[in-house]
Length: 421
Image (tube, rainbow, N blue to C red; front, side, top):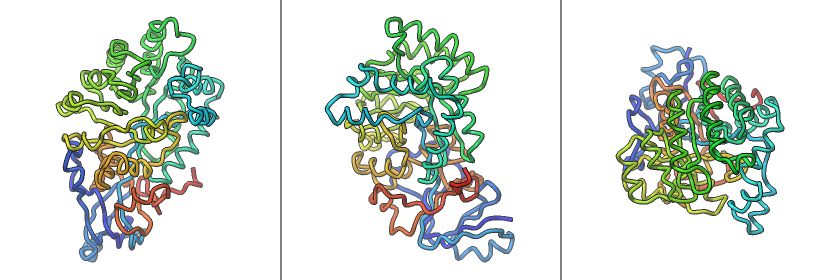
């Protein structure tokens, strides 16, 4: 028996068959929709969709086991958050106060704060504690509409702790009914004990961490923080070449703090995405236009750190397929609310609501290589679907910021009940 969502005010981001390319440039502002619609779900997958005046004929051939009345509501694809650090040991509100008192991100890092602070806390926590903390966060982000997720390591910065994070991510993959991609980010920062011997830490990543991760099949991607004060282009290249031997595709932290060369090294190694891009110039935009690498902006980081926002309007106008992601982490973006990320994209990035919606759905799926099954309302795709509250327009989503506008979240065709997880 099938499940029916009926009387839908408007279905957004519909496809008859999966897109072979992400949504780019002007097309990002042109969302395909169906008014007064229904969606038919068969098991975990979307069977079909259409207008309500066609439903009677359709139902002659299908037995319906459950109905959801979406009168006055919009239906959207689940949000695809392609950049998070959701497995972490604890919050860093003390550093939040330091920032209020005038300390910069770099000054806090030099004092042992930032990433190194999180790494020290994480080393003291066991896997069960880390799993439980991350479980609660994932329940929260699903309740706000995220139904596809990438999670990075990088708060371990040692052999044991990096693998510990990745094992927790594997448990989360098995626990939740959403796709979760694991990214190895051992090259997130240089640990204090290696400050005077950077090459020794890079050797540890290449000669010990990567082989163990590959042997245990713990990661889908590899990432490097290629930026000023972190890892150089040469160091990044060395790590990516070693990771490629184990079949790990790159996703790069690039251009958060400077025009670091991270975009170029990512493109050269056919990175799935280059993320941050708060500082990006015309040559880098042109290079991305000639590549298949997805540009991912993280406006939550810019908002929280008060640094420049990625120039997403300029990137879209140039023809790029922009993605928005949360960068959910304890130090620079302590929120995984993708509705708020849409708001930031519109307010500070001058994105149209339809552009922001593409950026957090189908383009986000491309940034995780999940586009065949997620990111749009399409026959055959997994039924990860959002039903909004009774709202007046799609523009209301980013406009009415700070509040949850989602009434129901469906994962694999079933209503997600937070209490069950």
